Image (cartoon, rainbow, N blue to C red; front, side, top):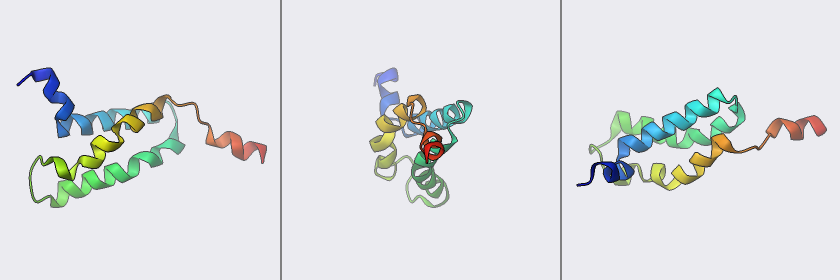
Length: 87
């Protein structure tokens, strides 16, 4: 087991990365992009309440599947309010 390499497959590390990216969106005041985090956070919260197994990858697969996209969200320059102003 390689300690640093194991972090890439850790369910807890992926959730912490999501929390960091969520906080980064709040810190950068990109409130309109927070809606993208809701599905994964909802699945995570339901797993906290009613998961049949502990630390099972198949229950948090959506976290790993959407992680590359979510890493880009806080750094994107999309401005949803600009389209509303021009209308």
